[in-house]
Length: 99
Image (cartoon, rainbow, N blue to C red):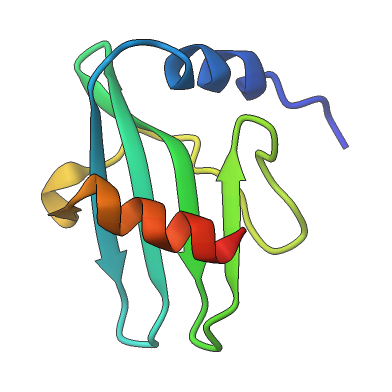
């Protein structure tokens, strides 16, 4: 496996004082994705992500855990027009429950 160089960049965004926004999307199979994003270079980059499978198993990704055998923190800017904005509290509740 190649060394993933995203960690320092994601960490820098995550630890910045930049404003956060929170997003949700789901699919017809019952899966859901939640994101915490920070804007950089005019794009929204995910700094934390929760994936919830149709079986309700949840996985968390952030700079300390960019990927595993089941998934990964998105490496592309978020297409926010495809997402629904949610509250920080809603994101944090799912993040904590997935912990």
